[in-house]
Structures are given as C-alpha cells and as structure tokens.
Length: 512
Image 1: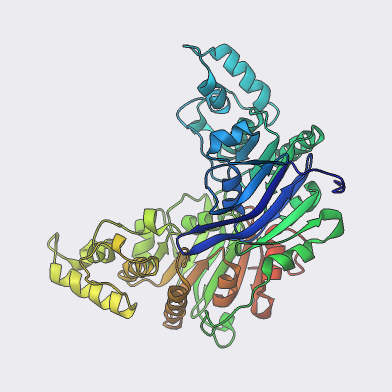
Image 2: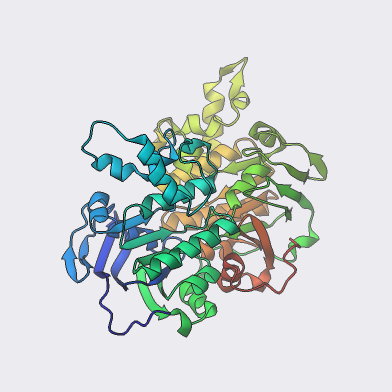
C-alpha cells in the first residue's frame, strides 16, 4: 500500500464547485492524487464522481475552485489541454470512431498532431499492435464497429496508454469486460503504478477497490465525505459512508400483507441472451412493485428489454397471467399488455417536437382511428382523460412536449404507455432528472397503478427510490441475479453488498 507521508500530490483539487442550472453537482470539493498510487473514487449515481473527472479532463469548467498539477496551479480549458498536462481519461461511455480501424482510433492523437501529408499505415498498425496486444488479441486493421463492446472498451484503454500520461482516469473500466479481460487490465494498472503513473479508479465494486487500490475517497450527493487508506478501512465502512441518507415521505405506503399470497402476473424462467443477462428467474405478483437494482453494466435494462421484445433473447419462458406467451418483438409485447418506459425519455420515450396529443396516442394509433384515419375527437378525449388522471400541468394539449418540465414530460410518457391499457408496466429510471416535488407525484402514481392490479417492475439507480417503492428487490451483478430482498432485508447496505460483490449474501441467491 502507498505510504501517504512525505508525498507531494501529482494532482490537487481545492474547493471546486460546479452547478448545472439549479442543481449543485459539486459542493466545495477537495481531492488529492499521489504519485504512483491507484486511488478509488466511490459514490452512488449522482454523487458527483463523473462531474469531477470531467472538470479534471477539461470537459467542464468549475464555477469556482482551483486545480494543481505537481504543485502548479493550472487551468484545464479543454481535453487537449488535459492531454498536454499528462491526463488521460477512459470514459465509461465508449466514444470511438466506429467506421475506421482499431489502429486509427488508438493512434488518433498522434495522427492529429502529425505535420505530414500522408499517414504511414504500416508504422501505424505496428505501433497500435504493440499497445493493444498487451490487452487482447485484436487485429488493429479491423473496423471498430465489428468489435464486441468489451473489446471496444479495451481500445478505449489502449488510446489512453499511448498518450504517455502521468495521470490516468478510469471510469467504471470493467463494466463491459469479461473476468479474463478484467484481470489483464488489473495487471496493466499495477505495472503503470510501478512506473510512477497515478490512477484514479472510479468503481462501485468493493472487491475491485479493495484488491487493486491504495486509497478510496467517498463522494455523496455532490459532497466530498472522506479519504481512507484501504488497509485501514473495510468494505462495510465504505458502504456505510456511501449511504448516509434516510427514507422520508417521498414514498407512499407499501403493499399491505405478503405479496406472494396473491396471483402471479408474470413468471420469468431462464431468461438469457448469453451475454448481458443470464439465467434470470423471478415472479411479479398482483399489487406489488418489483424492484430491480444493480450497478452500471449489471444488465438490468438489457434484461427487461429482452423480456418485452426490444432485445433478442436466446432462452426464456414467460408465463403471463397463467398463459405461456411468445414475445419476439415489442409489438407482441404491447398486444399482450406488457409495456416498457425507457430510461432515456427524450431519445426513446417521447417525440419532443410533437404535441402532447400526438405523444399520448402514438403507441397504438388504431385505438383513435376510423378506417385508417386519426379521429381528432377520439385522440383529444383519450389524451384529456389520461393526462387529467396524471395531473399533467400544461397550457394546452396541443403544446409541444419539449415545452414541459421534466416531471410533466414523464407524465406524458406514462400517459402514452397507459393508453394501451397495460397489464404489466416496466419503468426504467422513472424519476431520472425530475425535481423532488414531481418525484413524489410519480411515486404515488406508480403505487396507485400497483394498487389497481397492474404489475409493476421498477429499475432505478437511486437506492433510496428502490427501497422506498419496492415490495421486493432483485439485485443483479454482471449479468446475473445475485439475490432477492424482501421486507426489512431491503436496505442500501444489503443491496450494495449484493451489487458490489463485497461478500456472499446468506440467502440462496438463485431463488428469486
């Protein structure tokens, strides 16, 4: 482990604050990175980790505060300046040029800095191979679009390695990697550390943090909490620091009684696509809200997309209201009464430049049509009925959805899926980007739908939301279900243990 005494930090963050509109993403943050250390940064989604890294990399500029590199105050005005300062950033979101070769992606910075008229591709492929071969057997000549997601992640890492950086930021680097690829990455990290390169390692995974890192800093709700030496703390202590919040009256009363005593709406057996979700088994009972928790890359969204035909699956038996059903596409899912609300409402859930009317009716136009033509009276009546029930605040149903607040946009998205009279609703991040007042309304709407007999599956990265809403919670990790939590077992501590792999859950994890 790194001895923190008598070390001059290679990077210091002093009193950095960053706001986006009325939201404070970072509040007076301080952080330091020592030479030749692997420093973990841990925190729940929205804690401020990625925002801080983007400030270090010059993607965002702080509202206030200072950055020091090797004791010298610097202004990181853009990512190119960050590269010149010796900072490399491997983003969680893969950002490669998919239509060109692996080599061109890896050596892109060198190509951009070249003053020659022509590219020496023979030398380019050779240099790229020397780097990528450390990570995997990937042909540097093939196009990136032909690679798996995990190999694309390795290309991202190779891009950073060729920059000769002194500070390397890795944001959830193992989320898309196999176990073997992860071990190779860890070996390279330790080699870089031995060369004096400092690494900021962002991860939720306690096992990785405690195996690979020297220190860990905890962030929560935009605030820096503390930094601990790995050999002087425990996974349990770090998880407790990550939590630090109480459930309040944001959430309605849960199901009264034992949910398993009611009728089964959905029975999922052996659902798998062989990659992003494997051997998933669970039941959804009438009257309950069934929560699905897990870290980024766990396969939560992919699993429910496979369930409702938005993603291909290889195996799986779905029994819906007592009947085995075959769902090969989303149209089949809608016809059965199973609907899905995407986590990205702006890109996948709504037509922002169309009216509220058009959005509400879009899922099944035949309901408001006569002889192939839309009946405007039926369309208006349907939208008015549904948006009134959801307490939508808008000047007119003819207004564009883009003119609404985030909370009201989400209500339009809910009205859209309710227009087909669903029997099961899957909600992926139902309150992302919504203010507290609107969240309370959405939470009550979800509980009212469950009380009305509609099956509800909720995915959320906000642990208080999963705990406050759900009657039962299935936790996923790395494409597999890790266990089922019921009643008083549903705590942030238990969810984080299952999701991060900090220790084996005492229950039979296969039974969900």
